[in-house]
Length: 570
Image 1: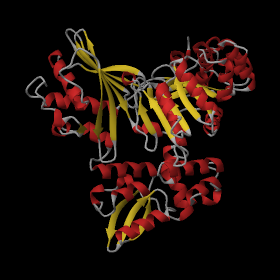
Image 2: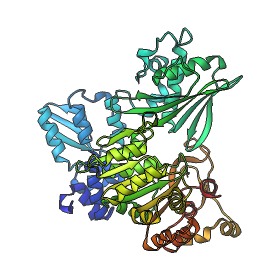
Image 3: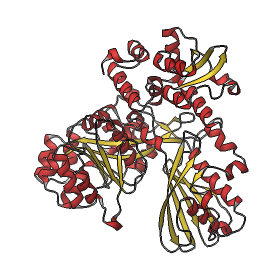
Image 4: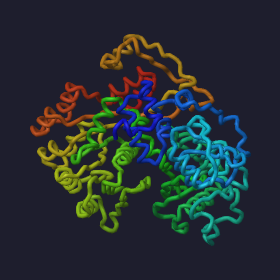
């Protein structure tokens, strides 16, 4: 895409030096892939603040800026614009006067969108410039008919909690095996826990029975917190309700089971839960993993890669062949990193297939396969089948054995881009793990392009964090002398805690070790070198390990030293 094909707003941002030309072109392509306007994508990807973008558009194109926050949404004319057009063009009808329709837009240069609305409504359309983030919330509210999403979840009454749209739940709820007579309180309780988990950004929900108590815990920002202790007498009813919702066999309590729940929050937003039940001494423990599809579309800029690390990853994704490996413990964000890469690659010109155990997030345009060892469909069999289906890009959920590794490497050597994961602690250990599996060193050196080791650290809350003066001996002992950022720019903070966060932290950020397989590293691999030798060579070539990357995020004020130690210190 040349700069001549950029939208007027994108060109203006380049002209004002808010973003560079390369970023503008990349953002425009990404917006087209995700069916978004440039303004919408630029704000979501945090290329520019919503308020700043609106001010620039107002000044550049002579459009007065309207404050959507003070508008009475009861005045919006219903049904005048098709919902698909509202989503497609990121616009919202505000009011109608005679033959004129005034619509809120974040990009006044989107003339094609205004023309299509004009054609479909038969009304003369006038654009009203508003801030992109406020417009996104207003559109979500309009399409869901439920006001602000977060506020709606908090203020639901008992009747709304009872009737929440959960796929597969209500139709099967009257199963004769379902214990208990009046289940309404249990239905409300379970729905409220699920909604609270979504609202607080939790990743997992634990329902746990014990001899004399029952507790519910949420994992938020990687840490479990107890949120409820319902009466132990309700344990069987709660587990039965969850099993009905996830289409499990509620009469079977002796073996583990897997299921899924889809909860519709609005016409445009649904959340999936992956559910697992486990028979324990005092009943069934049930754990739900929250699968939010929007997490796979955050964009690479939101994940926390440093500029050089991002460039290495993007360059590897742009190659027609080779292998990209992502490694780290369970819960370190490997899936999001891989899905972000797949989203970048997902175009109509490419055939992409994935083998996963299980498929966590559904991605439109990608052929996703659930492996099932019970019927003989393991990763190796799925890979063999992929290679007979004219693939361009293949993603293997995990390389667990020599057979899978050999097929994946063969694919990477024969013109396919392969993405996969391993469970190792660092990038150098990933290479030695492949050697220990029995993969020939020549094949490793010639097929693996990039290895990304990662962890997730909690982000400091910007509202309450405070400076943390650390003595020189502590800085030296912790290894801050390896950080190459100018000492004058260091901003070391510590958590405090406020109403906006959880114990001083809000959200998480990735900590990465991104290693490109260079000639020097290839030589050590071919000679059968160990992980220590590979790590030394990677450090000499300027690739930061996980510890250095974590300390860099500490001096940048993104996370705390305590958190860096938690995720990277042995």
